[in-house]
Every structure is written in C-alpha cells, then in structure tokens.
Amino acid sequence: MDFNLTEEQKMIANSAREIAKEFGPEYWRGKEEKGEFASEFWKVISDAGFTGIVIPEEYGGAGRGITELLIAMEELVANGCGLGGQWYLLLTEVMGSISIIRHGTEKQKKKYLPGMAKGELEFCIGLTEPDAGSNTLNTKTTARREGDKWIISGNKTFISGADRAKGMVIVARTTPKEKAQKKTLGLSLFLADLPHPAVEVTPIPKHGVNYSHSCEIGINELELPEDALMPPQDRGWYSILDTLNTERMSFTAAAIGIARLAISKAVEYSKHRKVFGDVPIGSYQALQFPLAEAYATLEAAKLMNFKAASLYDTQAALADVGAVANMAKAVAVENAIKAVYWAMQIFGGYGYAKEYDVERWWREVNLIRLAPITQEMTLNYIGEHVLGMPRSYF
Image 1 (cartoon, rainbow, N blue to C red):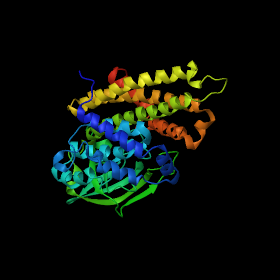
Image 2 (cartoon, rainbow, N blue to C red):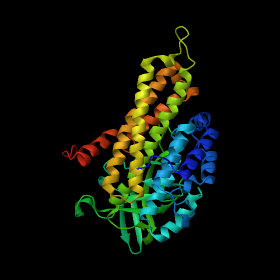
Image 3 (spheres, helix red, strand yellow):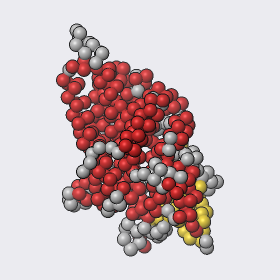
C-alpha cells in the first residue's frame, strides 16, 4: 500500500496550485457578486487538460482516473479557488464525461467526449425533481417510445449549469414504477443536446455559488432519436449510482479543499492579530484545538476518499465503492464545517466581511452538507448498507 503520489500526480497537483494562484479569492468574490460564469478560469483549466483528465486518450483526453481528478480538484479549491475550483469540473467531467465513458455507446462517446475534453462542450445532468428530491426512484419524468423516437416530458430542479450546457444526461422513467419488476428497475438515461425549444430553463436565485446558475427545467414533449438512450434500458438506476459515487468523492475533495483554504487564511491571520497584550491570538488553545482536530480528521477523510477513488479506478463492486465514498463524505463534511466555523471565529467581525472571503467559504461548505445528498441520507446509507442495520426510512 503506497501513500505517495506518482510523479504524474505531483505534476497535476503542482499545475493546479499554479492555476489557483492566478484565480484567487478576489477573482471568485467578483464572479460570485456579479453572478458571472468564470470563463477565464474555465479556459485555463481546459487548456491545461483538466477537463479531459478522465477521458480516454482516443477521445482526446489524458486517460487517467478519478484519483487524478480528485487531486486536481482539491488543490484548485485549497489554493484559492474555493468551491469554484471543483464545481465546473464536477458538472462536465463527472456528471457528463464519466457517465458517458462508463455507460455510453461508442457513437455517443465519439459525439460528446472530444468536445468535453477540450472544454468546448459543457454538460449537466437532469436528475433531481421537485417531488422526488433524494428519492430518485420516485422520478416522474417519462420517456415513451414512438416509432424510432423517444418522447420525454417532466420537470427537474436544481440542475446546475443547465443555462450554459450544450448537453444533458436526462434521468427518466421508461417503465412506470408500479409496473416494474422491482423498484430499482424502470429508469433509463438519455443524452440530449441543449439548448432546445422543448426544454425550458429558469435559473433559481440562491444563497451562494452564484458563479454557476442552478435551474428549474421543464421538459415538454422533447423528441430524441432512438440512439439517445444510454443502455441498458430500464436499468439506469445502477448507472446513476455509479456516477453518483464519483460525485460524492468530488464533493469530499471540495470539502477538504475549502477547509484547507479557510484554515490556512485563519492561521496566517492568527499569527499577527493581537487583542490583549502582545500575544497573538493564534497562541490561544481555544482556537488551536478545534482547528487542529478538524485538520487531523480531514486528513483521515482524504485517505478514505483516495481509497474510494482507487476502488473505482480498479473497477471494484458498486457497493464497495459506495460504502467508502459515503464514509469519506460523512467525515469530511462535518469536519470541514467545523474548520470553516472556527476560521470565521478567528477572524471575528472580519469573518463576516466579504473582503475576507471566509463568509463565502462558509456558504459553500454548508452546501456540501445538503448536496449531492444530505448528511442524514449519507448516515442512513452507512447504517443500512455498511453496518447492516434495518432500513430507517421508507
């Protein structure tokens, strides 16, 4: 068991750190306040090959694994970008590229992956619905077959990047829930090109991450060709889980990165800030201990996340990957929130001021407690699928 990064992985990490220096907190603060897409950042990470890390070489990518993508994400986040360093890569490379690589047809791979590898084709995933929420099995969007076409109708919500995306993975029911042989059957995945007149996209005003718009989507009789289906029909639930495992890993990397960023800024400030006498506040154990504890636990979560990535990259069983990915996220989120909270405490009133950026990282890290799945649902998974306890929700 080797815990050292390879030379190539070190190069990815170093490249990410250099890019993050170019797009530091002030840059993201401006994009957040203006509600603008970080187009300059997107171009640089595209040119650096980050948008194609996991895409096979025959489609223009680097042919590496989720491990390398997590390294890039965490270092971008931790060295100045905050959640923005992970977010755009998540939407296109995780939700788009990985879904197509693992489950798409050869024709679909040739159509979408080269543009995604170059950063020319942004993607999103139409998964969450207003009534279903975390219960994807209650998806109401339908796809019916008419001749050689699929007709899709339904509503999605919190679909990030849909206002810019040129493509979308759509989760829809091809067999009604009541007619499926078991509850996990009947869902299928489709690939649709955007924008499209049958797809109405409406941004949702939200608390943070406003350098990316999360949207409500209305799909009204969207016609797709027969080959828009990502096989196998009716077994899309398992494909979704496969992608969502990498989504969890990505958010774990983001949580760790945000915590590292907040801790580094707080530590730097604490070395110079003096309130009572000539002793810097960084010497107060009441401030040292919670940061030290959070940091140590986050390092453990990081190792667990790399274990999940290693299992995924070596084609381990879906359940094995899911168990480790969920445990890593559960630990990372709680301790990242703790780390950013105490970073704000160290800055005192300045922690509430936008110019110090900690309040933005506080908003970003709390999002990870809600998405891609709530912390409570993560613990439900661990209780049921790891510990073997009775199902706690119905």
